[in-house]
Amino acid sequence: MADIDGDGDLDVLFAAVNSAPRLLRNDQKLGNHWLRIVIEGREGEWNRRSVPKLKVDYANGKQISQVMPTRSYLSQSELPVTFGLDWRRYR
Image 1 (cartoon, rainbow, N blue to C red):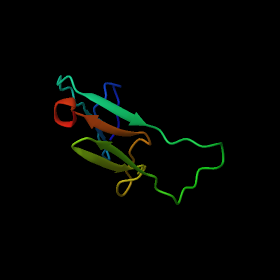
Image 2 (tube, rainbow, N blue to C red; image 1 turned 90 degrees about the horizontal axis):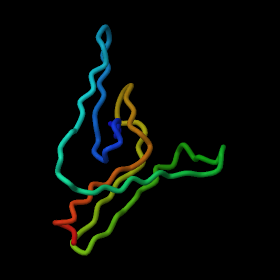
Image 3 (spheres, helix red, strand yellow; image 1 turned 60 degrees about the horizontal axis):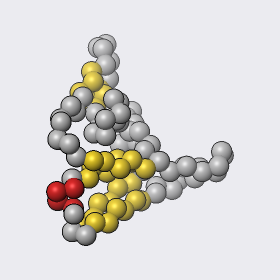
Image 4 (spheres, rainbow, N blue to C red; image 1 turned 180 degrees about the horizontal axis):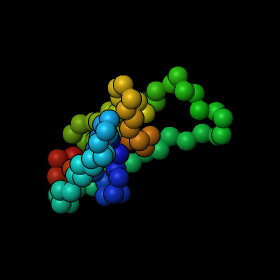
């Protein structure tokens, strides 16, 4: 999963043996906002054993996510963490 087209929603890219990759784009036009967070450090200092946990607090709730570059066997997700912000719900 990654924001392939840079529009703030996550898209999915599938790859399979003996077939072309397939991109499933999430092209909803809902008008919501998003927050993308990239964890950075100095070169060579990334602790590959740590899994940073991020929390976004709102007046009416919170969202929690982790930087998880791997999801399952032979798969990977992008390192930036994307939070969807529906302002109607969280004002």
